[in-house]
Each structure stands twice: as structure tokens, then as C-alpha cells.
Length: 489
Image (cartoon, rainbow, N blue to C red):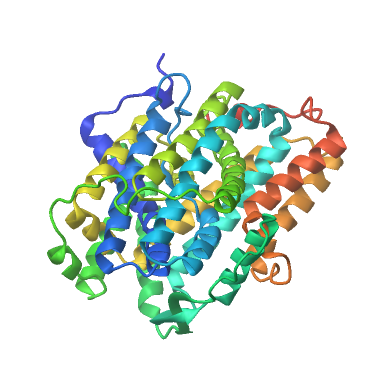
């Protein structure tokens, strides 16, 4: 019998389910190009190009990851790929010292080199699978879900502060870059200009507005109602149906406008090396290589979560192919003027919500992303969806990720092996530090910030080390079962 992951659905269903995945990840996909483009002080036309290039590359890498490309690339699970936020700090540092196209070329050079590094170390990272028994996997997935809740909640309420006109700030980013250059051991390192054009902050008057809360609540109720009472295909697209209903309500209430759609072009090609040939700076390459390691550790948790949700065992070979694709995707990103890629955890939750495990759904989502990248008008239409509409869906999806982690942990032996309690307790606590106290790293060396800014990474390292200390790394703790055995049947 065909495994649900390999099931080929009718074209109409694939298109609807693929669009559902795209809507879920779109806001996160375009955030990094906006941040970096403005930090580089690029023109609005170039920032728009960065967004189109990002969507285009997202689609290509998603198709490679989900469909597979030879035996070497692709985890062959329902994965949507997007730009990792772990790379934002180092890229902002480059932008602070080298605004404009020169900084963009340095960023893309570091990204290409880091992607090649990721391809080379993927087999080694794949061998670490034995350090991820269910007590570690469940803890990581739980932290992923809890960490994502911040995104969903901010979609509902907005951010407490809003942007104003750009002004020159961010000496911290320049100091971080200076530290990295001094660490390279190069004599006579010149000082870094302490100037970076970013958006200043002021209190957001629309924060937690009643209209946004009601809109998110409406979407949440719609999704739950469709899930409870609908049958068949309509139940599978409950999130998409809820978002569409929310868009209609937002349009009637005047919260959704289509001005940008009318201004956008119908077609715009995405050419490689749009800003010129890349510049390869050794210090920046080393920094981005560290980011690549962080991405691969987080991807390991995502792949294991998907393996548990889809009842598809993530073998060492499959994990290595998926991690190798992270590196290949990052190389593709650098070539097409965009950024490092990783599996998007938002979409992991959507797999749990819909129960649709076919990887061809994400392949369809990749095709849609390529079309959006080549047709700015379609991308502008998706971008016009208010984040409050996505907020109601976010609570369901991100909570589903956390619930999957709890489900895996429910099969772990806590009764006769109390050490597992310490693994979960300490790893969970450390994973929540960046969420609860985001400024905890302010007195630490700037070079460490990209490594400790991810609660998922902190939880992963803590869980792996504690499990190895208490239970050893060769075999799962007594009474535990493989992650693939705890998925719904």
C-alpha cells in the first residue's frame, strides 16, 4: 500500500492544500528580506526584488526537499522551506558596516560559502541521530511549539511598538561586527562605522485593539467549527477556509486594502547575481557557517517532529539528505540574491492540524511560491492579508506542534527512570529563556548572540547533553519507543 506521505492527491486538492501552506508561512517568509533590505538602505524597488527572489527560491528549495533530488538531497516529507531568522543578526552586522550593494554582495558571498559548508558536514550531522531518543525529541518539539506561540500571539495583538521613519541607530550591531573582525586575528583592523538605517520604535496605538482580537477570534472559531462539523476535504482545509472567511470580514471592515495589488507588475523575472558577483569575506563566512550549524540542529528537530506526525521513520540517511538540502538551499539562496533556508516550523503544525501527510501538498506549495515570486501582483495579494487573520490560525497550528511533543513524551518512561524528568525539566527551562527574557544576552560577547538567541537550540543542546549524561547515547532509555511509533494510526 502507498504510504500516506507518498500519496498523490487530485490536482484541485493539491492546489488548495498547497495554498493553505503558503498562507501560513508567507508572513515569516517575507519578513527577513524586508529587514535586511531596509538595513542595507536599498531602494524600495530592490527591497521588492529581494521579496520576489525569496519567494522564488523558497519554492525551488521546498520542491527539492519534499520531492527529493537523487538519493543525496531531500528528506521527502511534507516540508515548507523558508528563510531562517538565525541569520538576521550576522547579516545586520554586515549591513551596518557596508550598506548598499557592497553589503549585499558580502552577505550573499557568506551565504553561498556557508551553504557549501552545510553540504559537506551534513553526513556528520546525520550521525548525531542516535543522540535523539524520544525523551530528547519530545522535549525539542514541545519547545518548538511553545516558542512559536509568541509568533501567533503577536499576529493577534500586534507588537507593543511600531515603526516610525528610519533613523541611524544600532551601534550594538557595529560593535558586534568589530568584535568578530578582531577575533579573526587580523592586525590593524579599522573601526566599523556605527551607523545603520533601521526603523525607530514608538508605542503602537493599534496594539491589542478590539477589532484585531475579534477578527482573530472569528478565524479561530471558524477553524474549530469547520474541523468539528465538516467532513472530507473541507475538514482538511479548515485553516485555509478560516483564513478566507477572515479575509472577507477584514475587507468588509476596511482592514484589508488592495492598493499594492494594483500597483504591482504581473511578471518580473528573478535573475541570479542581481547586485553583482558575491564578495567572500573570511570572517563573515565563518560566522555564517556557525549559523548553518544552528540551522541544521533545529532542522533535525523539525524532521523528527514530521516523522512522528506522518508515521514515517526518519533514518540516518533520510536525515542526512534533508540536512544536505538545507545546505543546497542556502547556496541557491545566495545565488538568487536571498538568504539561508530551513524547514518552517509553522507548517509542521499545519500537518498536525489537517492530518494530511502527503509530501506532494508541499510540492504544490513550492510551485505556488515560485509563481508568487515571478508574479509580484499575486505576491502583493497574499501580502495584503492582515496578520490578525493569521493569528487565529496560529494558535491552532503552533499549539498542535506543542501537543505533538507532549504526545511523544507520554510514551517516555518516567516511572522507572526518573532521570528523564530532569532531562525534560532543565531543557524546557533553558529553551524558554529567550522567549521570557529576550535581553538575557546583553552583557555577553556579541559573537555568541547568534548561537544563544534560539530557545530551540538551547533546548536541543541541553536535552542531548543531559540525556547522554543520564542515559547514555547508544540506546534509548528503558521503556521508550521510537518516535515513529507514537504517531496517530
